Length: 159
Image 1 (cartoon, rainbow, N blue to C red):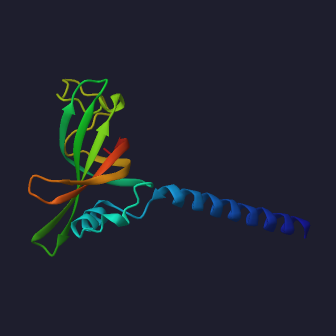
Image 2 (cartoon, one colour):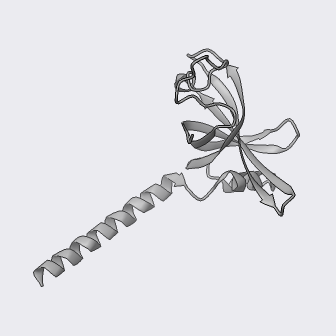
Image 3 (cartoon, helix red, strand yellow):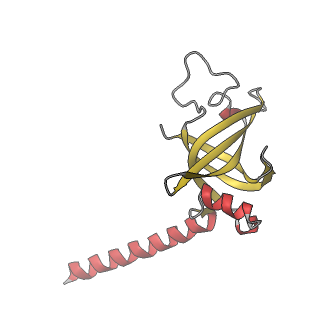
């Protein structure tokens, strides 16, 4: 009987600690938004529903990389991250956000010119990536559409 009571107490304590950890996680990370949902909110002018104080975890394909400042010290790149979905058999819906990647940690991973022997962690167009970032603002795409701008903090290739 004592073992059962001890087991029940340990399980209850573990559940309580999990709940506290989950609440702390939810306070800093918005794990519910994806590229499609963010694109939709911005296109409907509802970007105020995106909390700029929470981290976003997004995945998608790199559609383009524009290196704005190629020097390692003040490296800056604009990355177009896209996802899509089919409507029926004929229509493809495209959803996108722009990532701002700033700092020397991104210099070797997204060089202005692709090296002859690229490092294994290099990010290139068409790569599937996972990004952690925060909502920064709304920008405008060349086609005139409003697009969310995400300040990228960490990027990982999913290749």
